[in-house]
Image (cartoon, rainbow, N blue to C red):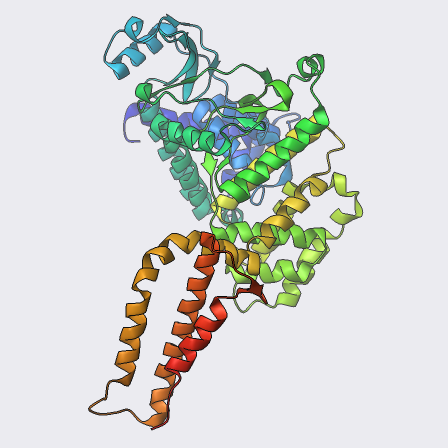
Length: 536
């Protein structure tokens, strides 16, 4: 920021933020004598002022698209922000004037290394959409296929890096000077924003996200993902199939098309939970501008710059908590946090359980259809922070997506009961990961490895027997022989039992006794007899 343009930009940012309310933070600081008096002399503080959330939103819009995008991402951190500011930041719109179509043509030709007329039969200079990072144009391939081309804005990367440096400076200043902002972890928030923004600049990454989502939903009547044309994908240019549908916020057009709004709303919830729990790969930017509706209430999604995935322990944590909340089992909620290691191990579970109960019981006074999953998750995060829990970034992304889906579903069908839609799915998912069914699924997944190991099993067992019977030069004391032999017995029994299970999974018909394939019993018994430790 030592250059003249950098210093001017810094001055402008500070001036706009000061008028939005930053003046109170700086001049109201106790270390600055006379600051309160100076505040009264500032002309923009004379007369009535809009609420602080409105002032901040207007300031970010004035500072440009990068700050608008930062405000949008910041609005998802409801675990950190006061509700009035978060509600206002949600209204930020990522809409900027388009750059000229002729400039888009030159960028595309440079990316492909040939004239655009060779690549496309048609190209529309007027963009379909324009945002802070890229804009989208329509076109047609020589074989007649309709396509859209997404082009990254020229010169956007230096501007992003310049404004991110500014955000880091402001975040460090706030962390040092304003004690109240430290719990917001401003530097970490800016770092998350930087990573998200840099990912969106790479259209190769977005194309990969789209392809994976398409594989998961190929031939599905619920969700359609347009095809990526990989021969025409570059870091700053991406070509995809053009889709046709009704914008999901166009209620009038959907009524005219005879859309079943209840089915559409419920299907949106089902898509979300399948993405999170079955595929573990979810579209994390599913706002109204990125969703269309096709025939038979099929969702069509676009814009795949932001996606999310969860660790297996995160998935189980969410499923356990949602089901426990439904049953008002707050002890299970508290224990799930301890098992996940997200709260200190010495935490008193009863205190944590009591805090969760105090926050959540008022919510359950409402009818189930009026209870928000997203708000419930938000309240849980807020309670957990009081007990030194650091909210995981992947869960914040999921919470944002859940709030979007939930709000969208209830706009389409106000009577939507998310609990009735989601609870059977979550209970079924939990059942498949706990108990005998989970063991069966695990063994099925491991069957190829066991199939490779089984031919070597007789030699392994023979070698173990020979090693056990071989005389030792210095035999260990009797009390030290037993533990090693016990491990051998249990290992042999486990191997033979697993072999029998693999046979079952491979399709060999056999009865099952007490949940264990019949072949496992004699093989396991024979191994134990052969390996049983003998005295002397």
